[in-house]
Length: 228
Ligand code: SF4
Picture 1: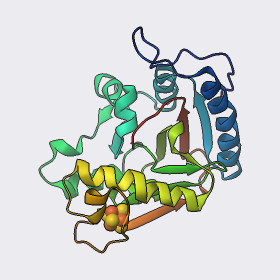
Picture 2: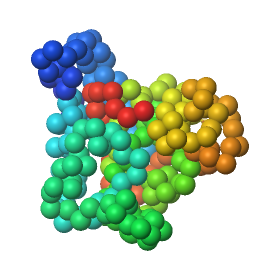
Picture 3: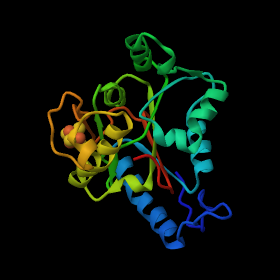
């Protein structure tokens, strides 16, 4: 668990690109400590990474070499380069896309050592909200893989559970519906219409408010805007 208030080298600060405002960086570092405290009170582990590179290093330190690793909805893990690092490292990566039989891949995932994923939203006191259509992601978060490693950009932090559910349904879901070419009202309007469309991706809403198993859920908060 790191608490580093030094002006971080922002991953967006490459020459010619916009740098993250110093005050936003400070605010993220402070807010992350509040979220980490909340996670710890819920028997989960929280960490703060000032940069994408630091987040990858932190995640890899939690994943012993030789582990079987799978993922679900891990856009943030892709964005920071973690998925590439796993694929290129000494791990057994279970790539669902490589399996013709998706059920076989899903069952293998449940037995994996590590499940990588993002969160649709997290509250300031450490409750995570995730929504799912097929429920492979939320079910693996709830049970199955021995360890779950979340990569979460600070853009996902919300005031409370109500705000987190609203974020999941009005920001994450419409963007994902558009991404997957689904025919849902939110894909057309940009916000949730509380649909019962056959294509809805809001079949299951998982509220992760406590982990019974110590050392199972690890959340790496990243000083960046990641995922949706
Ligand atoms: S309930 Fe329907 S409209 Fe609302 S976010 Fe989910 S898929 Fe979109």
